[in-house]
Length: 111
Image 1 (tube, rainbow, N blue to C red):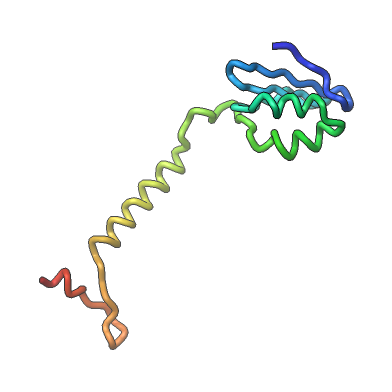
Image 2 (tube, rainbow, N blue to C red; image 1 turned 180 degrees about the vertical axis):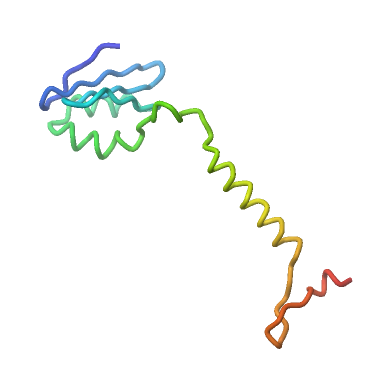
């Protein structure tokens, strides 16, 4: 994978066509990896007169964080489990509002 110079302020990019990974290096910052980038996006980045704008608009949203690419966050797993538990509880305890403002069991449950 070879680094190619972009048309602005010593920025560089490298593209791996097999994995579709794009690496971008701007002055003063470490290289950033982006996954699953189509080849035409890399070509457009090389040819544009404003690589910073093109990068921020078309490429930056696909940034790969180094540590969490393949890990499931524990907080998301807990939120999902809580959501499933609440949904199940609501389905099991279906209550209808009574005319006096209280709640009573639905007719389907009392049969």
